[in-house]
Image 1 (cartoon, protein in one colour):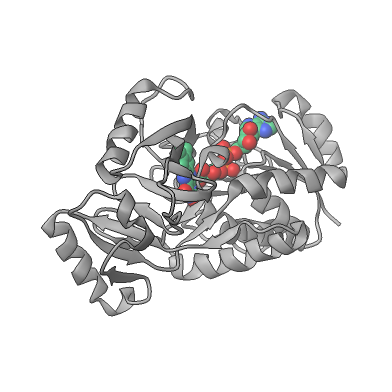
Image 2 (tube, protein in one colour):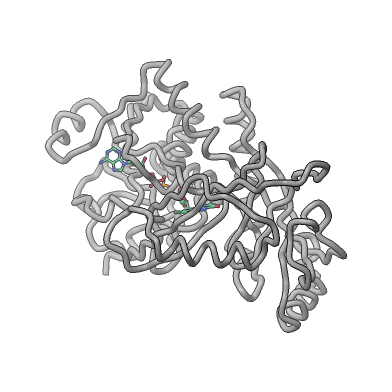
Length: 345
Ligand SMILES: Cc1cc2nc3c(=O)[nH]c(=O)nc-3n(C[C@H](O)[C@H](O)[C@H](O)COP(=O)(O)OP(=O)(O)OC[C@H]3O[C@@H](n4cnc5c(N)ncnc54)[C@H](O)[C@@H]3O)c2cc1C
């Protein structure tokens, strides 16, 4: 049985650990427990159709069913529920936007993913007038705030998790104990000496938890809604609201500037008052070619990376963690589209 150390317990390290264990490996997982991380700030939304042009996400037809099976197996193992299939109500304002939506809905390969909707349902009393509406089907919220701590506790109970910051000085000792190390460090991996020359394009994001004061008698909506920002009902009058995108930043702290931008986007949708309960920020481990980073270090035979999940960790982590696990344990070939050897020239 292979003994493997996984470094980092965001969604990448969690999925990697589970994929390796499912294939019989003995895994020890460590995490530095930093005050913020991309996975801890994220809403965990899987949105199959994104962008201004309403285009299907890369590989969604393959990655979404893989994600469902994978997260369902984790739900069974942990005895919790964190996979919530919830449509996204897309708010459309400009005529051009509504027309583009209609033509996408008319395309045969979009029929199962998109629909037109006459009204906003339970959201109606919360929104400004003047929108038309589309529905993004098969969207999901993977509640990382349930999954990550539950997985960590279970690993700790089994004695295979420790709070620890990996550093280079530990390498010789670890290399004598473990058959392989897999780094899942999020954007901190930019400083990892085992993986030079990767084309990162990290992007900071900020998000709120807001409370919307509801008049008595109003139902709390179930769907997520999206325009420039996305609002996700979490229960008890609380909603996740975000996020922003900033490619130049000094640190991981929340900023007043992005707060103002996000507030503006929320006021553009919501006609009702709301209160910002928390304001958080983190850096997404995004890549220039928008493809994950998988593979073996050019500097050490037994050192691997699983990273570069960018804005789509919830969708991508399950499929690609299993792909890397097959490579590492069973020698399966890595897809060149994600293999970090694409940067070796
Ligand atoms: C505002 C915002 C909203 C987002 N919304 C969504 C969304 O709705 N849907 C979606 O799919 N994605 C979303 N994302 C992106 C998503 O968060 C990422 O794709 C994903 O979480 C990246 O996970 P990761 O495990 O690679 O990195 P991280 O989450 O950063 O995890 C890395 C972990 O490694 C640990 N670590 C780092 N270095 C070391 C070390 N040397 N030793 C030990 N531990 C270490 C860190 O403490 C951390 O826990 C969002 C991101 C942001 C910022």
